[in-house]
Length: 175
Length: 175
DNA sequence: TATTGTTATACTCTATAACTATA
DNA sequence: TATAGTTATAGAGTATAACAATA
Image 1 (cartoon, each protein chain N blue to C red):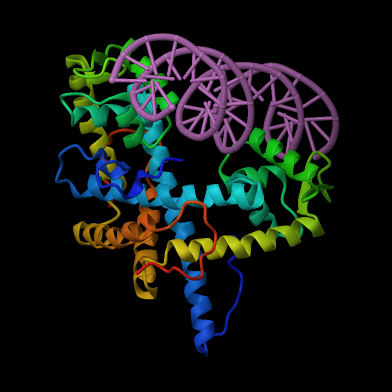
Image 2 (tube, protein in one colour):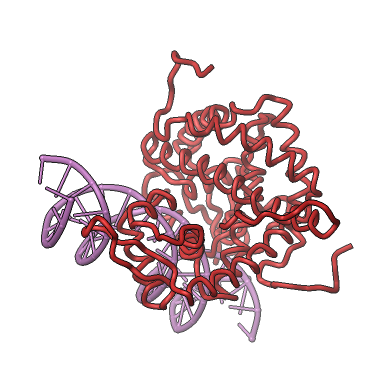
């Protein structure tokens, strides 16, 4: 991966054309930071645990649900379509980390669950992963973290109301 | 990721744990928001302009450099390896948006430049793109935007000092 | 020899759609 | 008919490595 991040004229933020526009500048800086954090996490998951973010996320969902989740529920939670869940689950099952248990009431579905090995392994990874995140966000103190956390709540709510594809709606102005 | 731990908040150690817990929660919320914004932008670039984010980014870099950029410089700025730049440039050149002009002093290299058509088209896209970003960040008022913008400056500086792959370095703490 | 860019290849991640087996 | 999951396929988006032309 290219590590030119700290070079002021070579990172994503330099996408800014010439603008003095707060929203665009904010977005480019936000994207640069997020991309950076995500890249570090992906690289370390690969080099330390030979795994990927989607696989880690799937295990994380299962860790919270001892009863298991159906493929469809996993699809919703990871926000990807069903075919992808089949693929990731296949891999994790082949490694013995998850199993497709019969669903108690619907023979079409499965209750995908962590195996004991999977649970042990996930907890080990999750602890290390959290240390990475702590390290990466050490640039903010506790107060700054909670400020941003609170601000993001508002943004998240707003984003949920934005249509993914619609481009312009002159009327119907939100709030 | 599992956020279900209940830590008592009575002593110093617990507060530290909560602070760390806060980093993970913050990261997950930040990632959710960024992913959402990026997804909307990607979808709209595709549906409105039949293009992609890397292609848009490449045009944006060229728009700032009338003299053009070499393939290697584009590789650095977009933070991807050279082979990818060749592919993106091939596409954009086929559409008449960029051209590989001869490099004035190095016959191995090119000065990749926007064509007049490419410049016109990029400016049109960039204006619409900015409106999308304004819409997506309308959940924050001007003050909130500048707060986050300022906070991100600190995070960015910190992130630049984090090794992409290294996992733990107890000693040698920066500064 | 070193560097610029191209080609070839492969892998991850994702979406879509046709298909099956149940419901 | 509708739903849960699988299979097959396609296409971004990325990296690596061998290569050709030039420095």
